[in-house]
Amino acid sequence: MGVFAQRYANQYLREENAFTERVNFITFLLMTINFSVIILKLIPKPSIFDVGYTVGGVMLFFILKMGFMLFLGKIFILKDIARLGIFFSFLFDRTLGIFLFPLVVMLYFFTFKVTATLFVLISFVCAVLLLLKLFWLWKIGTSGFGLSQFYIFLYLCALEISPLLILGKGVVY
Image 1 (tube, rainbow, N blue to C red):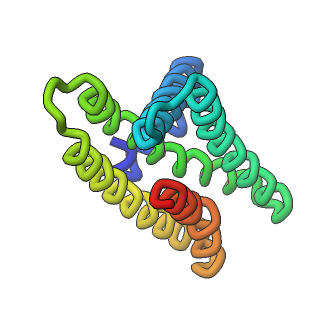
Image 2 (spheres, rainbow, N blue to C red):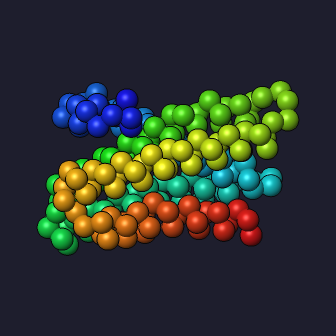
Image 3 (cartoon, rainbow, N blue to C red):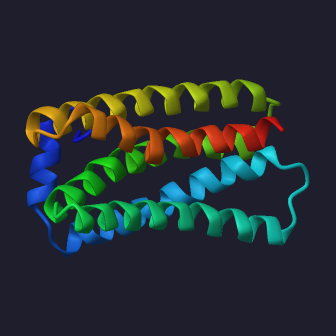
């Protein structure tokens, strides 16, 4: 619910305890596995090394994204805002991982050949949640924290949009 209403996201953020840490870890693994499995479906006849590289690469991407945000927060003396930015960014990524789970299961275990249809549906779900994520990050950043729209635009281009463009280039070429 935190994706659709900021009140629920703030409530989840305040209830920082062992349960939420476990939920964060489980949803991080689910998100990583789902994105890795989708990428692996695009690779013809992946080997065990491809699987390891893909899962490791996706995990490394999310860890580096988190580290880069913390690094920028430390440089600009905005550690609290960096932690909130990580929370809200990963809230949408985790929600996307949860929404993609049934589609990924259908992608691999459905009896009919529905791969193309599911890829269109997966792309649609990813696009909708990405647009929702960009909207909320923009709205929270400008109104909640008073950040410059230019800096929010740079962040969104560098850490949210460019990885998708690189992934798209890798898939197309």
